[in-house]
Length: 158
Image 1 (cartoon, one colour):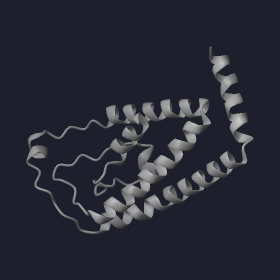
Image 2 (cartoon, rainbow, N blue to C red; image 1 turned 90 degrees about the vertical axis):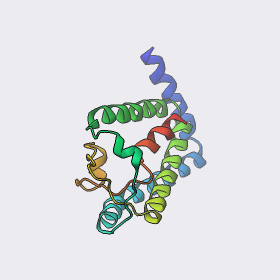
Image 3 (cartoon, one colour; image 1 turned 30 degrees about the horizontal axis):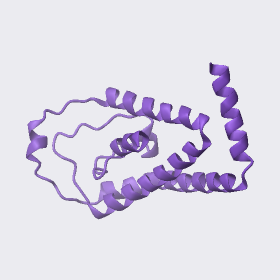
Image 4 (tube, rainbow, N blue to C red; image 1 turned 135 degrees about the vertical axis):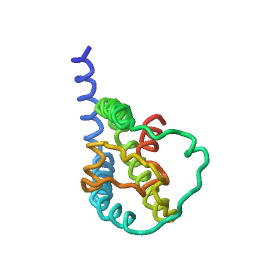
């Protein structure tokens, strides 16, 4: 079964790679992604320095703060792994996921820039050792609208 998966994946990728349009789209997509990821530390440093609005969220105040970093980390990165396995099998899925993730990141840049928020009192920083590398090894607390973790999971779901 694994051999068949690998064999069909190789065939799918060979067929896709023989199409010049696919190669061009994949190269452009990865170039855009590299630019986006390279800009993350500067952007997050910028948003941490500015002041924002504090939302008086009565519902949030009713929920006790609990560190659930490990379950969130496991859920997110298991889902990403599943998406990468799917992309290994289907090159078009990778292309769609690549461009969709780039658009998601650009959307986050825009929304976080337009809606400056202060971290709520009692915020427990999400300790995600993989995502935090993109932030420059510091805890970012003002990237609140909209959530990168939640939106990435929803993107993969879609």
